[in-house]
Length: 257
Image 1 (cartoon, one colour):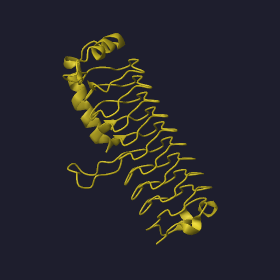
Image 2: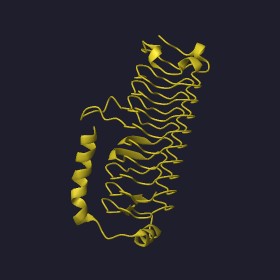
Image 3: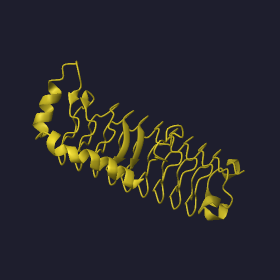
Image 4: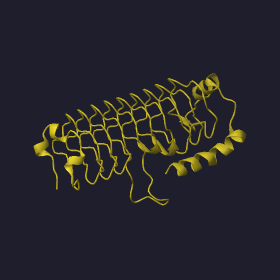
C-alpha cells in the first residue's frame, strides 16, 4: 500500500519543476481575491511547499495534485474539495475545515489534523503517526469500497495515530489499519470497524455503543472502562486476547456470536 502512494506521489512530483510557479502567500491571496465565479482558482500541481497558508478560504480553488508538503493550512477552509493525488507529508491542517473533502491516493504520514472538521469526508490515504486528537469524523467515509478496487485493496492507514477525544459517530472505517492507535476517550457510536486491524489499539474510556467490530483483529487491544453497549464482536473467538474487556461498561449487552 505504501509503495502505491509513493508511486502516485513520484509521478506528480516529477512534473512540479516545470509546472509550478513561484508562489507565496501574498500571490495566492491575490489569486483567491480575484475569483470571478466563472472557474476555480487554478492551483493545480503547484509547488506550495513550506508556505504559511493558514486561515485562507480555498473552497473556490482547484488544488488537485498540488505539493503541500510541510505547509501550514491550519484553520483553512478546504471543505468539499477534491485533493486526490496531492502531496501532504507533514502538513498542518489543525482546525481546518475538510468536511466532505476527498483525499485519495495520498501519503500524509505525520500530518497534524487535531480538531479538524472531517465530517462526511472521504479519505483513502496513509495517515500513519498523524495527530487527529479531538477531530470530528462524524459520518466520515474512510472505509474500503469493495465494488471499486481495480488495483487491489486500497484502504486508509491509521497506524499509531492519535485519535484521543475524537468523534467518529457513524463513521465507516471498515478494513482500516489502526494498529496501536490511541482512541482513548473517543466516541465511536455506531462506527463501522468491520474487518479492521485494531491490534494494540487503546479504547480506554471510549464510547463504542452500537459499533460494528465484526471480524476485527483485537489482539492486545485495550477496552478498559469503555462503553460497549450493543457493540458487535461477531467472529471474535478469544475474548482473553482483549485487555480490560471485563471492566467495560454494559458488557452484558455486547454481542458475541
